[in-house]
Image (tube, rainbow over all chains, first blue to last red; front, side, top):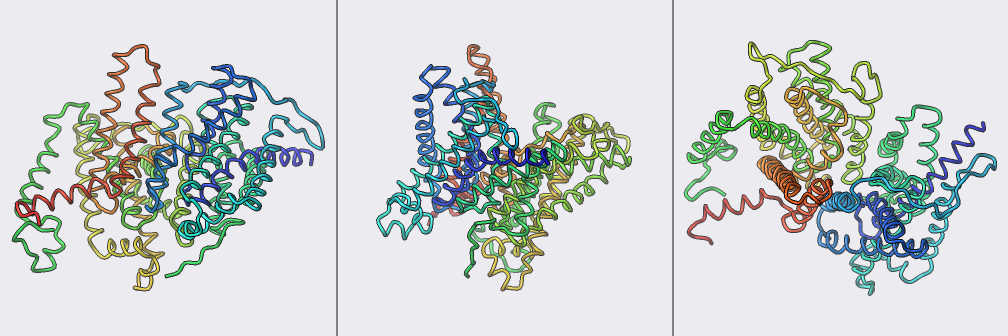
Length: 289
Length: 350
């Protein structure tokens, strides 16, 4: 029983990070209709930028963190401006290939600048563990708290602000949104900036625990089942999906083999695709002739 | 379009692959040139040609599924892996002759492909891409960890050199004469399937699924058929890979390869057999050139970090793919068609 509680807790905590990355993917999919395969690489890039600013340049930690998030957002804008904006109106296949190409570009860039080594960040968040009902790793607790706060912030942003309303309108229909005076191009840039910033935050939190390396990018592929389980267009889905997948991974690792953990999310994905393709909270599309 | 003065007067002419006398001459010359190439290519170039031929087989299958039938497959390399392992196991455990394992490996991969094609009943486009992506992650992991006494686990499988009659297949030249005829046969089969009723049904499904269904096409059946053909080709590519490399391991078939296959298909031209040949040839030559260029650079500038060649390679590949997507989404095949039309209309360009 204590085992189960422990697995559930650590699964939930890991799921917090998945949810954060999934939120970035969902934002982009909602607003621009593109599924971003490069988000894992944006996560790794975030870790590297922080390492560059804090360790290699030696900026104070908090300034370094803020600058890193801003730089990541700028990178997101550049990606959108130079690859995906040129592909608006082309098939889903083209956009998918383009984000994969962006992923490889970022991987090459990171390999060129940081030579594929593993670096460690200074520990600027408290570490250790707390024993409540189960042992809680504080390094995992932080990402969880940050992602919950960010979810709250995004919920308010979409519900209360005019910009959030514009983003929701763009997600519904690009042309109608333009007719209503929403600057769709700006919204696209903003979405990519926000998503890249979210990925960078996730990257920083992951790098704090695991160290900076380009293998952080693989978390991007593990998040794909999260997004599909929750539903592609749903922010609530991203968080619920993230937590569920985190718990499933943790339970599988606890009760079955370790190698099954890496494919358990994809088996869940296959089941979701067969039973409920739109995911838990996604929109069911009605096809018209 | 046809050259000036050539008119189709019956159905056979309309459907023919090689239509005019010039095309016959060129095709025969090309085949002769291709099949005698071991005479004037050295072993290095010949091994590149063999690698390329194996890639073309995989891309052909992918082009039938994605280019013709419109179902995205992000896991082609995993099905190549299935084909390679089934061929290797049939050779080492069951002592089957190599040539028989080629179609059998294709069948095995095809059946596994059908399983991953099943969700295509309910999901399409992007969602389907995700299920095939799941295949790319699940299949190699299962091979690595389930029944490692059979699959060899992390050690992979080493296959002895195969024999064909009295000839031992251990030189590039001898393997070339196994792989190249197979490739030519597979190209012919693909072309024939795609110009017939099956190909037309695939194109109809790609262009509008509902319309295709209301025309009486059994959409699910044809989608599964497309999956089967695609993964069959992947399986054949895998067994050819076994014959050529003689050692396989589950991590020889990464996600990167699946994406390369897609990229080659897009750059070649989706929905054309010629495109599935042009694309791999172009990308593979470019890849070889970039590798050579990077090694040259590393020789000249010794102070550069050692990872630079690999990273240049990745970045240039990414940039080329994006440039093609933006400026030439219909691929090199489209350019070729424009060129052909232009010279056939010469000197009257209107």
